[in-house]
Length: 282
Image 1: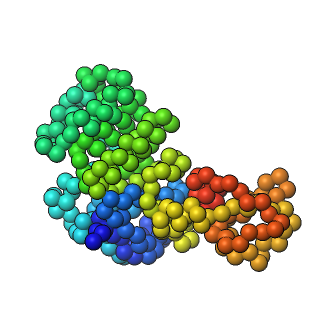
Image 2: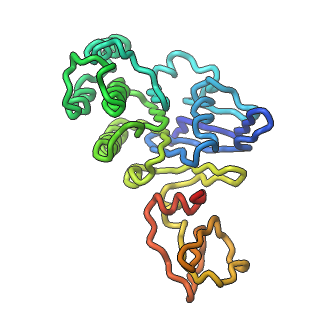
Image 3: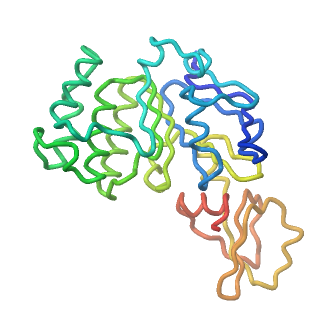
């Protein structure tokens, strides 16, 4: 029987009078990689904070391994590897010291070989101080430490912060093998959505004041279509349009559109194109 590692039910959150979202429900199953996506300000980091018990929703509930997120026992927290956007590292320590600290904390669960598989690609000394590293190098060290702690659930809030294109791709490939090797689950946010094309099982795409998309990655990729039509074309009878963009005398429409149009050209969409077509470019 498939287990829900994360289960969010009817989450509703406001900041003052500003609604972030209402009745948001989604789950992350065991062995599943899920992306929580959307523009800035739609509630991605809010959701991460609710998951980690730092914030309680106005209404609804969030369960992690069957426990309420605001009251997770230590035994459950120890199963979670967390990367926050804008994470803090111990800049005054050497990388070696930080490695020893994590190794002591997680004991036999800590897999040094996993850390070094990622770390060795940075090209810096293990005796180098954290303060001397670039933002991208710090990210690589922290990601290596998190993966080496053998979590059953990875929560990665903007994991790609500071990483160049090559390392982002390397990390996604490594993460794919890491997840499949031990029935681990991942919930991740990022603005570099094309990196996730071959990694995701499910997507949760949040939008301001609109219904989110919650479903399989394949359903989103196969269902979201784009067409280019003459600007003078009447669009009022076309159902399912999520967004439209005018460009060079033509209008591009995006949505879960069942029909093709004889007077339209269907667009070839990358995942990023489809994502922007769903949430709107601006």
